[in-house]
Length: 416
Figure (cartoon, rainbow, N blue to C red):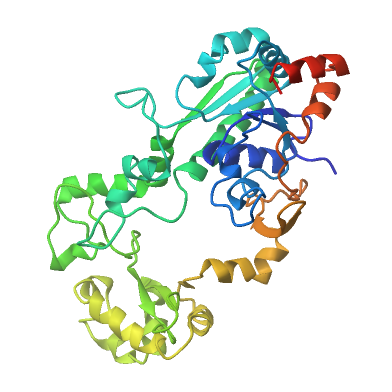
């Protein structure tokens, strides 16, 4: 069985997280991804947050699986020539350098198109065109400028960034969608095109319900499903709402048995209108169903603090997994707060290949995430990340057809 992207060759000019997330997914789908790194240095994450002395960090290995690794300095004469040949032989080029960096290497989009009119050139940027387009952006900057931080956090607390990398990895996944669309269009047009995703735009796309709420707030002055209603006041912008659900049904995090010692002994419980009778009965409040103070969602709005406190009295008698089992049995939506340790050890995630164990020559065994996108006819397997420059000679000889003396000359120039 062939892989979905077999035969697609990707020139991977990415580093750190947003770009490598994108090219790693393309590699999992079967593309031949050639990661270009600076001779002698490599991707800065190889040495960042190291836990095994002298070995590539987990930061690097977990973002660069299934790729071939090659060193190249396109600023040298020989390097420039090799880079142009690679552009000619590849279908997609992906980069997430600072604005204008590839242009300064002597390869603006116009020149790339001349070398290879079928090339799809994909970039992650911090911002789209506008006042900030030349600014450098990192994960948390994107979360702040895309609207996530202002709408996340305790009700009266600081804006908060999330532990999910919605700026970096989120943008990388959006870029994959753009690349696949451009590859599909190329089947009809025969031409490549430019694909760009700004991190601010990707974060905003992931925050669209908050933009929805901004417009509702402007029209009505209140957001009934937020904890601020009916007990507090609203300002001009969508507020932070703690752990409230953000949907039409109220949700909150409640403590479970063992919470005093375990920072993750909690459950998220949603008071869904249609499941309320079952929830009321299971927590020992069947009388609520006859009580007009409690038996409609509108009546409960003013008393949600009390309702969740009563739910919590019940959840504190059970572990989070027991709570999940009991509530699922009566169709009440809920979920345990799973720690990274629990997720890493979860057999079901190992079975689906969402969490995989990989062996690495210098670091040994480690676990990483596998492809979250499952294709029935193109299963993904996770191979280890390349060592610095591991496939340089192989790529130069098999793809570019360079002879041994040409490779030696390029090496003497410091091009590879």
